[in-house]
Amino acid sequence: MTVVDVIGGGLAGTEAAWQLAQRGIDVRLYEMRPVKMTPAHLTDQLGELICSNSLGSDLPDRAPGVLKAELRRLGSLLLRCADQSSVPAGGALAVDRERFAQLITEAIENHPRITLVREEVKHIPSGPAIVATGPLTAEALAGEIAAMVGEEYLYFYDAIAPMVTADTIDMSIAFRASRYGRGEDEAGDYINCPMTKEEYDRFVEALIGAELIDLRAFEREDPHFFEGCLPVEQIAARGERSLAFGPMRPVGLTDSRTGRRPFAVVQLRQDNLAGTLYNLVGFQTNLRWGEQKRVFRLIPGLENAEFSRYGQMHRNTFLNSPVHLHPTLQAKSREDLIFAGQITGVEGYVGNIGTGLLAGINMAQLIHGQPLWEMPPTTMLGALCYYVTHADPADFQPMKANFGILPPLEAAPKGKRDRQKLYAARASDGLESFLSDIGANLPVSD
Image 1 (cartoon, rainbow, N blue to C red):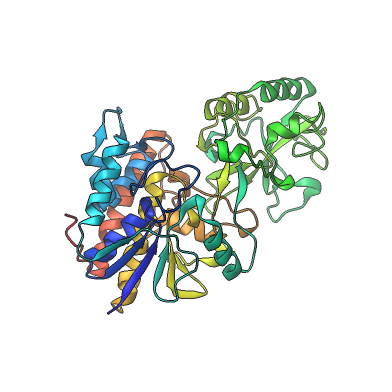
Image 2: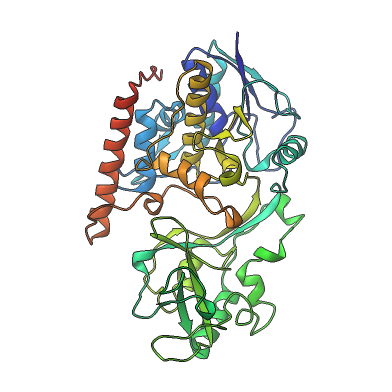
């Protein structure tokens, strides 16, 4: 009799265990709390939410809402628990944290096919296993995973750059060019936002004076920054011209409007194959999200920019998934080892739940000798899994659900809300077509 080991009792691990058990497979779910606590958790409950109690927008034409709709359709345990423990939050799905964790814990403990084991796992199991240990993977197991993938990728203070949607960049101000004319695209591989000295001085002053996100106690004790991804506000604090000689250096660039080199320039690099997302090169940051919107909109050409991802900095543990994982979330080195949750590079509570659901389904498919699911990229879950397994490995960073990672619409209307509704409708149709094509017989979620 096959028993699957699921490591981690967070959002992804509990969802994966439930999906396996509902498909007739016995599961050992390992959670090290309370035997060994993490620096961030407060209880021994499964599915404990550490940061916010909000699972994001629940509106059907918002990216998080599209993902939630898909997970409800696929029989997610955790979405059911969230709905049962919801608290008023306008158009968002927010939960009573204690009730939410309690419902998950009860469901797992009472399932006849799930054995909950309260101990630390220090080694990768030799049999079929799902690793869903999250951003605070314990040191022993983290070391094993690092040895397996053959590179350093664990435990660092991840400073992520913000990302904007391409159609909100003002191209009457910004211009396309690569330094010294290099690049595959004749027009230039980068979008450049030029600054005069006055604009640069105003930006730097606002950046240095902006409010930062407070690090948690265990993060403050060991501020382990990599020099190659220092937060932009730290670079600015090193001196008046530090940015102009660093990530905002204008060398090799000519402003097409003036015919001269700008005093400084902010470069944006394409982040997805569809060309709908651009990240601010060298702009990793720990500013509060509201401050990022205020300060970065001082950049000429980004006055009305819409952010699909804000920058952030936190202790994180995740794989270089484009190198190591298939879109099915299987390890490329071993088909019976599947990863789920934040360790895959997916951000956000619901994204973690979604990868846990897919990991559980695919492990069940593998054990039953059936084809594994590779979700359509037109669905939000499929787009997330595709993104984290196909992004550029050289600068791979975590991603949350957003419309920018979906394939572009064939005939996109100009209105943002109209585009979102079409994306949502296409995602729903794509999921139904996929389920119909594979003849999916979804188990009862209760």
